Image (cartoon, rainbow, N blue to C red):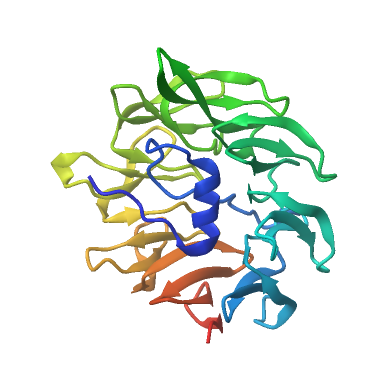
Length: 319
């Protein structure tokens, strides 16, 4: 069974914040921005000589590359790693909104951001207050008022990991009974049921799509990418809310829909972007791809990063 690769820096850091065990098997999913979403980013992280700054939609550098690492803007702020190797948050003017004091951080979602203190995760609000104590092995972004959360406990001297979903008060609404879990999307969340495969539950913990998939991603724009079983050589296709294939499994790997496009990998190991019919809109020429946000997507070719628009035109590229 083939597992999704981690997309370069931005999603690599997001993944490390969401996974603390081998039960997590694919890159962290990023919120699919809608046309009128006030959280839609206007600036985009960009690497110059090993440091990160932010460009605008035209490719112009707006905030200088002075950070060791950076993630996307969301809700008006972006996580950045300072020269002290700690993470904080800045606004679109570069003003520090949350001091760099955390060992890892994710973008804000629904007013909260996951942060790591030593080896535990909690959540802060926009004022920087730790409103959910750092006591979990992993906390993902909030969607629909719930966040996929990794709970770790010792049972007879053995560390046991399991996933559930917490509310903004840090209390589990869905208990940690799953082998793995990803964020909710459109009322459904992909979970791996113990001793079974991946399916989807609703916010009442009811299984809505049976666990028959090898891997499953977050729903967005009406569809979700899933990995089929060995009968179809572990290929990826797209399903609807009824669990029925809209696009039959034929891709090597797949991400999550955003702005009508989804990153997919073909047998050549190259990534491109397909539409909801599975047709390639941007040819598979890249070594890794992110999601489209406000018309741009971060992609990687070799070791270099670049931004492309939804026609494949290069807007900015790393020198």
